[in-house]
Length: 184
Image (cartoon, rainbow, N blue to C red; front, side, top):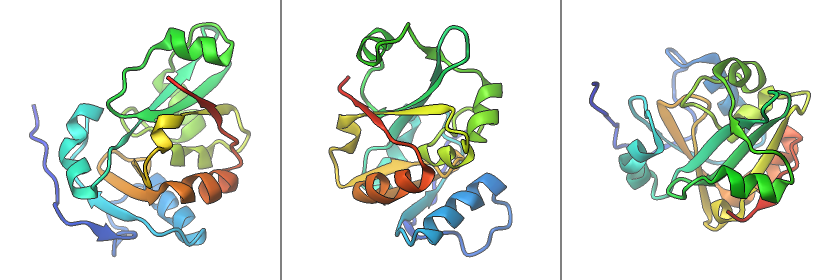
């Protein structure tokens, strides 16, 4: 098992050099820069789970948001759920609030096709790749309770800190995804 490593430096904005950065990550920086949204960044080795994000959260001074990519049984409807990282996910509770049959985790192929990401790298910023609005965005209100919001730039080797008000007021409108709010 690989050891988790982190660069403890909190960087402002995008990396000085794009070399070694995936195109999907560079596209996230391009989006944030185009919208003139300030953000801080920390680089680290791959984070295999939300539990592994503790050191990242310390550097960023926030709680990383859990991003779950879900689908219905027929794999015809897709949902991106944002919720606090430490909060337990209960599919029955979410399904009841959304008025749909029980949701399950969507597969890697759909994740790549619709959001342009791989497992472990799911992020609200991946909605920039969902130009046909096939993914419903659902946000647990508790995920927005703090002034800052944490997510990956579609790669789980970097984490970002954004102002929550920029996420709701500027990023989501630019991505053309109107969120559905729930309380889990």
